[in-house]
Image (cartoon, rainbow, N blue to C red; front, side, top):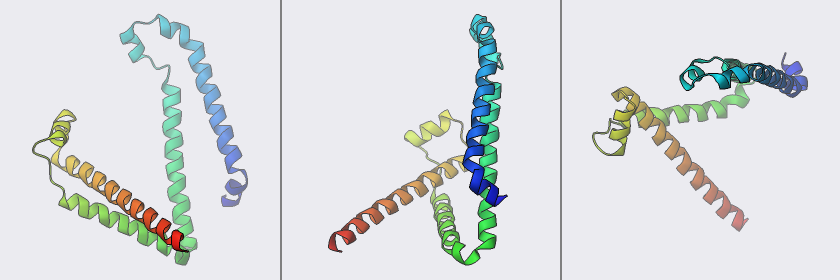
Length: 156
């Protein structure tokens, strides 16, 4: 399976995408006149775009499953070469856990207003805050790594 996908994977993905696009446009174009004749409320209830949405969801789930399956396969087959990636993933998870544990729900300000607007629970708010903190830490780390590597290259 891996050899097949390695050899024909891009062509198969392109072909599947093209087939879905053709089916989607065919179904939309066949019903666009009736769709345009509907009232705004009836248009919102119409299922004319359901094929495209379901196809996009299916392809997203298929790709996510492929990433997980081939990732686990590679780790199982090459554990020594995968150790650096595993350690990096564990560090990323550790940064998120620390950021999640340190965060607390906002009591005032923009974050509190947004939490009220989107009706976030305290746990959801901590999760969002932990994710944002993790993203900022990773951004800062990338910026520092970029600067250090450029300075290092300057003196090489």
